Image (cartoon, rainbow, N blue to C red):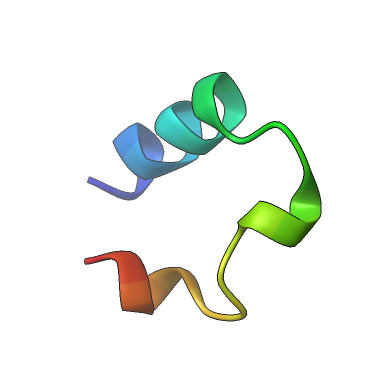
Length: 27
């Protein structure tokens, strides 16, 4: 699941500012 999460971020996120302070918040 972690690998899928990283793949999702790499393919979706455009700017670091769009990511939450903690990846756990996304789950």
